[in-house]
Image (cartoon, rainbow, N blue to C red):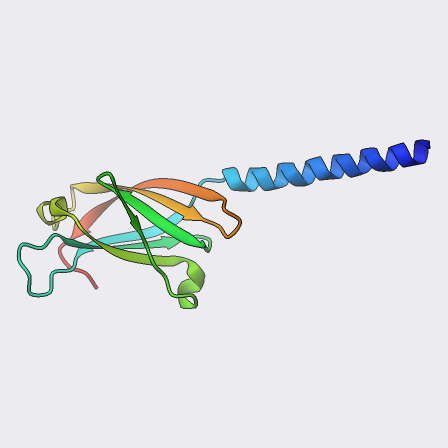
Length: 133
């Protein structure tokens, strides 16, 4: 009976350690390695069409950003940068006023989801460039 109790205690301890390890991983902050914001005007003026590119240190399943209170879901190609590069476009009237003034930045909230549903977050600031691409 004591051998069975010892085995059960060991199994419980291993289960707790595995749970701790996975919870520590989900509390790691999201690491954004680079970002780029630029106006994508074509022939249009005024130009409130803003391109957003985000490079992550680790792959993600889904990425969304929050810009001036609006949530924008970004897209990636499955093979490109191994799901570390994400981009999207949004209409943002403030972007044109900020473009080219590298001393003024836009604050972005970045949410990256993993396949298991874990969400990691980061906040960053980036200038708005006068051109996209």
